[in-house]
Picture 1: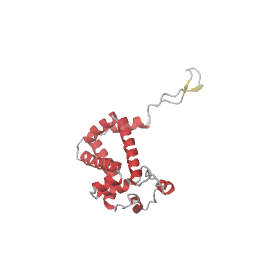
Picture 2: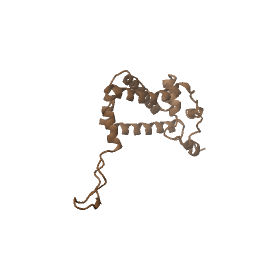
Picture 3: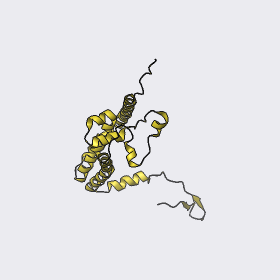
Picture 4: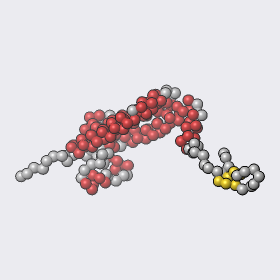
Length: 186
């Protein structure tokens, strides 16, 4: 590391501030250096641990909860409140029905899950895939590297697909709640 102050010239002892060098020692560069210094097996174990620890509780809760027959509100079993958007506007938020869908999927009720929130099925399958890939990484398989490459290559398309899927799922949820029905005149 270079000193912040350096002597102006040899004969005198005056000092002047030294210009700061460009920051190359960022947190990201240090993290990449730390990651690169690990063996491939250690990297596999770390990725596997993160994936399994991140997805297992979600899948476990989905299997443990009981789906709310209304199609929304299953998360209340966890001590959470109802959906604020639904309560205040009468319209569901884009995530309404996702916990119920995950619960249906966790119990193997595919048709009920699709009927509740179709995009929730996609998210559940992605979560389940993350769990399987994490187990594979713990077993020494390198599937996650291929998935990471594909994800980085098509990140814009994946993000657009998720946004479109979320929007389509929300429109479906609104339609299934009868919010687009025209009022009868009578």
